[in-house]
Image (tube, rainbow, N blue to C red; front, side):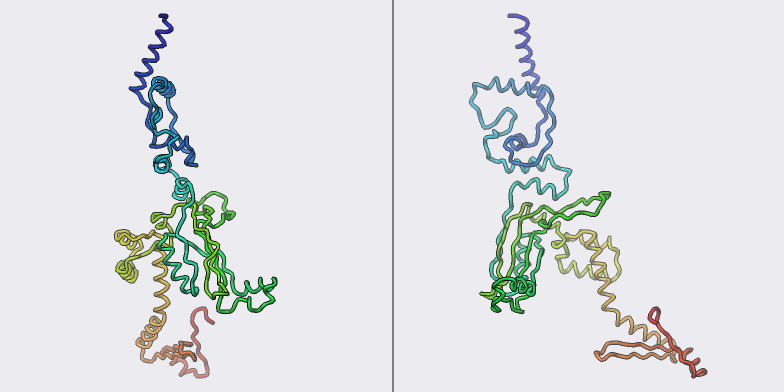
Amino acid sequence: MGPGVGGGHADAATARTDGRGTSPQRRGPGLSDTLRAGASTVPLEVEEQPDDYSMEHSIQRDDSDTAPRSQEDGYGCENPDSTDGIEEEDGEAGRHSISDVSYEEEELRNDVGLVAVEPLQVWHSSWESWQAYFALYCQRTMQVLPVKETMSRTERNKRLKRTKKGEDDSQMVPVSMDPYQRTYICTHGWKKRKSRSEGSRPRQHIRLTNCPFRFIVQWNLARGELQVKNGTYSHNHRVSASAYATYPTSRGIADPLVGAHVEGMLAVGAKRSRIYDYLLDHDENVIQSDVDNLVRSHSSSVSTVDDNDATAREIALFAAADPENVSSVAETDAGESGVISLATAHMRRVFGRFSELLLVDCSHKTN
């Protein structure tokens, strides 16, 4: 046997020995199946294998030509012809390999098809009953569905007059059916607008995914009820409790006892960081901006409610400062405070000496 032939067998044996001892780094579960079967549209980065990787597996396939083929290939993964468990493996592969993308991008990449949701009840007696039902529906199905367009009764009648139906007054929308129609879409379904930004501070979280979910709520003149029609009840993004918790409409204080304690903290002027820590300790779904909104709304409500009380206290203090101080309050026909006149003791003494002078004291920036 020549040296070339013997050397070939030696190299093959060495390759098999080296292959058993130094196997390549194992990749994420199901990564080969996902890439081969094309179940995911996400371009996943695969770690480059060493040069002897292809040699090792080609030799293993040559040795096993006579053996019956199983559901596994030479890579240690399931046969790409088998479709069992592809969806689970695709999700696992995405979670292992995609770690530096935003939440919105990750949910788009993990979802292959559309997500169907529960359809809406068709008939409703009024807008009030519809709003009550719609609020419970959004909370139960974990969706945020804003109003995209509203058609008023006037606009509908104006359009009808341009057609043959406008010649018949019975086809006109009555006053009681205003607004005539509302169009609802998913919060991810808004169209992307041209940004005026120069790109120096780009937005980190973009919610727009061109979601196809939409439906129309319209008055049915024949039945005199609201009708839900033209519905597309599918989303192109994930619909789950974790995704729903990120929307501002789902955040807030759920426990009434915690809310009462927060009101007390706001009344005594507690710091925002302390209020925020208290809410997090009690497992409330809030962020820092929610606490800022609570403080602002509390301040505005207190200033509005306590306005009359503060004015009454100032008048009482003014009268108690000097017995000769005089104040009068003129009310309007509606019973509200109109004009408040104040005359100090010094003003009255000066007016007693120089009665020909008219002393007028005006408030700051009102004259």
